[in-house]
Image (tube, rainbow, N blue to C red; front, side, top):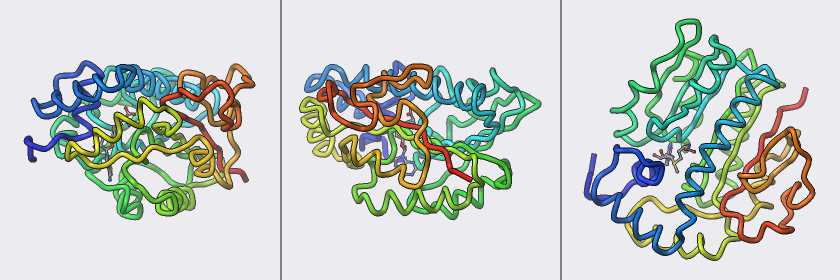
Length: 264
Ligand SMILES: C[S@@+](CC[C@H](N)C(=O)[O-])C[C@H]1O[C@@H](n2cnc3c(N)ncnc32)[C@H](O)[C@@H]1O
């Protein structure tokens, strides 16, 4: 592990108030916060979305299996903790490519005894290898929720992102779900911060418009309220502004999210 190069998992951990980061990550984290102070809210509200989405998937959609790709370092409420609070038998596999996440994975592996958790050191550029390794914990003949939160921006080409998503969703049975949160290209402050981030030597993060994020759900049924700014995602409320990936009233949104269901 090269601790002289900033890394997205550790900068994210710093913004979330964690201790698993190095001076270089804190320096970049502080610099980006100087350019765009709301970046800390972005990290926290993405985690809030994770909590709401996982709770909804377990409690309302009956999902019992989760594959969390680009899971990041353990945080206050990890996917298995949220899911197993609803249904202790939930099974969760975490995937990340940062060796520090692997070193801290113990936290992610403290499963309720009636469920299970697993950790795969993997790269989303290789979805087949992730699916193969996840089979040790997940049963792909039953529905799975694929979680891709804050990670797809590390792939710059939309077609490659769609390829990875299609590959994952092809392995899933109808009734499976795709969950995405993605940094927004509609916020000038975040665009400026992303430019600084790129100059820091960390792995590039490509911001996208809500329309681009919506296209990643092609072929899936979007759960209401659709692709919306992250703080607004709540399947219990139907919203008008930005509800289907439009930009009404959402020009400053820092992150967009959505949940899609694989139809029968
Ligand atoms: C911004 S963090 C998001 C963490 C978590 N999903 C969340 O929303 O709180 C992005 C994560 O993606 C991971 N990541 C970056 N590139 C990746 C890749 N090619 N394959 C797997 N994980 C990757 C990073 O190590 C980091 O943990």
